[in-house]
Image 1 (cartoon, rainbow, N blue to C red):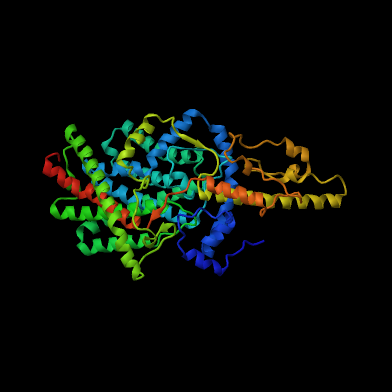
Image 2 (tube, helix red, strand yellow; image 1 turned 90 degrees about the vertical axis):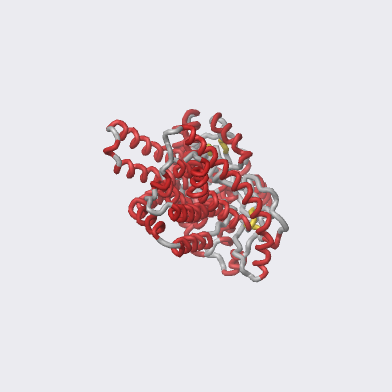
Length: 549
């Protein structure tokens, strides 16, 4: 039977911005929730792609069980940090402060494209991460599990950066000895491979996620290699109108970013990196006007032989960035809500789902854990502690986000339908053969850890009892959801009160993203544009004035 197409009466629900204060509606099971929240074409796309996620899960679980070790847990949990936004946002300013602005520009553009387009596709397709259980998720980041799974942003960033660095290494091959060249080449390959395989080993992504993410990263690297230098030259050689055009295009990109069906934080990261590109373009363009006649790299020709000056630039520059963010964010969050309410009076707001509108609150309270790119100054000590003690990683079993929970519910319903179909087919076959009695219905109800049924298992109940799960996992915090109780008719019921209660418990147990406010979009754009401006122009000027350039 073809997948149901959502009725037009759901259009009002899709256009409305739900209040983040309300708990998820337990009555919206996996399929019904996405039918209501997504346009018809996106719902059909998701329905075509979701079987891939369910198909690859048992193979991922088997791979994880075969390869699992404490050493690999620590290794892949640590190397995953090398593909995070925080790592790159820490490394990017240093490129400008240590005389490598060309590399800084390239990394900014590639990472911004990777974060934006991977986040766009994540919110467009709304595909969950591979189901847990049977997988166990190993991570040092709590926010990553709240995002959708397809595609892998870690893989996109790692492949694009590694491919670009390999290309640059090839161009400068004559500057290195054969041994150094081969070691650096192996390092970049190892970096991309470790990030990619680690996302599957840690149970965070499937084959489909990393393949698409890798292809996206390769395409971004190709775009930068073939057109990056000409684009930079076009921006630096032009007047303010070119800069205004770039900012306009970036603003449109924020506006047209796809809206998710669940409260997914991918949009926040995309907005932050769009702001970074705005600031880099503005800072680099204006900084070039102050040093006319000097090539782009020459404008950042700092002293890299004095260790004291290098350390002073890095420490001082990062300090300035933290001060800027703390001051500007508090100012914007305080004074933007009245501006938003004034603009809203004339119908000029741009509402976005899961963002609380300014007319529904008076002021923005202090926000915690509101930034996935750069941690708060108060969080740095905890971050360093996690890096000093890498074994303090999190191994979780069970749904961690609303998307996980809805997929768990939808997967349970799908297995029940498959069980009924198998039972009916077996019953009809037995009637035709007129031999034996029907096996109990419970034999055909799979849980999330059961291997796929084979024809021999359907015909022989003893074979079913002898088959073993693909992966043995620790007891789940949601054990009652793995195998639902059968109804009086011999099969589980999707509409019973017990299912309704369990569904409500499951959705209420997952971590809820914090309330997000509409003014945070502009706040992130301004704050991160300022951070990038300080990296590309403000701090370099400050270094020259202080005398540590």
